[in-house]
Length: 290
Figure (cartoon, rainbow, N blue to C red):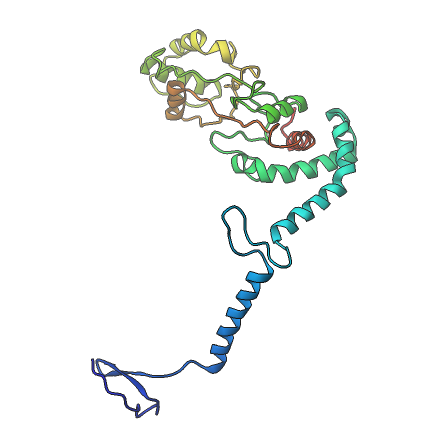
């Protein structure tokens, strides 16, 4: 690198005196319009600091000369919307679930409210279309762990399952392998037996008699002698083709070995009673409600 100020022969501009591998750096000032625009943005920013909330303080923030914030504006807009909805929501709150179902106007109102609330609170687990996922029930079918009537759905939403709420649904799948209740061979046998109940293929060496015996001695107490399930305990029907965690042998062996105890949160403390009621009506109307 060399340093000697001179004029570039091609551009006619002075150089900075810096040169790298024969390339000389021109001393080209920024355009005046660019500099003026840059200074204008600085002045604009200072104006924002003065007019709008900007600087954090120890326990608050500067509120600005206009006392305006987009957050306050949104809160105000939402309050206005709730005020407009107030009378209609009050009618919805006083109506029973059966009355809502039988009144087209109330039903449409509840479904509209429930759809919005579902998207904000339930879709992260059950999906935007309520089709569920592994470990999260599909709310469009007619297979319900805790019951699919309006009252049962309302209770599930209000108090949840294994949520810690005093009125929550309780009951869980035992860990037959981890707790030493069954040996691995017995677990594989009863897993194949459960697969056979819904018409799925079983292992070539499957002992149907042993599977029937193991199921009757260990599983029928919750799932029933006919394996149709028990909604009071949240025990699923094992004879249909609907599986919450999967129906392949490996998954069933895992389920029987370690148990299942998924948690549904209680929404009664997070959503107001009218919203919970609207949400129950919406879920019931998805197509799987009983």
